[in-house]
Image 1: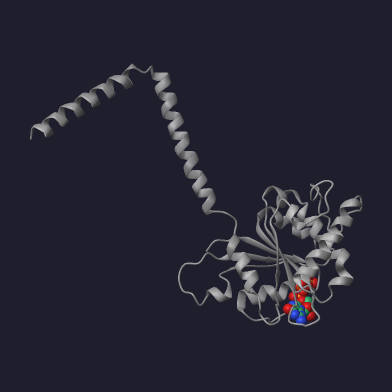
Image 2: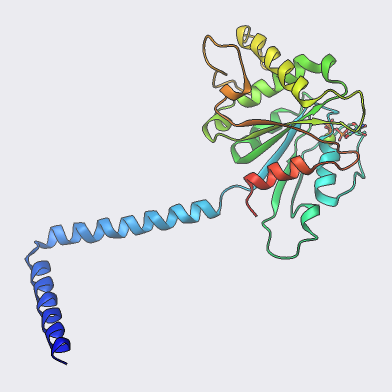
Length: 259
Ligand SMILES: Nc1nc2c(ncn2[C@@H]2O[C@H](COP(=O)(O)OP(=O)(O)OP(=O)(O)O)[C@@H](O)[C@H]2O)c(=O)[nH]1
Ligand SMILES: [Mg+2]
């Protein structure tokens, strides 16, 4: 009982001292301290809010005919009900990926945008780049060599775009159409594209094919280009929009749009 009483007295003394201490502080300083505290809490809350509202936009880009639209439908419906027609408009949708429909529960939807690859429509891409949480760059692994220059230029334009660099948007180099045995492997495609981009780096006074402003230079000065030198994380994967082998694409999307 004695102990309890002692503690009460000590607590009372402390609170008295505390109040006296606060009263000693000149009001302007007190207000400043309160303001700082308030601002700090507001800042903390907005940081948390901002994190929650992180973009869920994933872009499918790449040359015309690489298979973006087919991949879009595979990701959405788990089937490839369209293809062969050149897209004239961006294909957009916000949905839970098809394979995730099986898992019941709260899963964050993905905003997927399939941007046409036709050279005249590619400037559309620039509108979407600032919002992108991730980019799936689709490459036709069958018709790769005849298009190597164009493919590399397009990727170069994306990797040097200001918002892509500033936001460090991760890029998946998706080697598509691997259902055919004549398809090139992702390792081959990666190496060849590194070589081609190395050439482009030297001669990049050429006009951008995609109307995308090249705001940054690529790679490390004086070193042979490698995707590992990019500001962005660039990874490679194989897929087939035709047969629905899209596990690696799905995993990439979910890595960057957290469920
Ligand atoms: N073998 C094979 N063919 C594919 C695959 N994906 C797409 N194709 C074929 O490639 C062609 C182009 O596919 P799309 O999905 O329309 O290509 P896209 O990238 O949307 O082209 P644009 O809309 O013009 O930018 C179609 O004839 C498809 O049948 C695939 O995984 N394997
Ligand atoms: Mg299309």
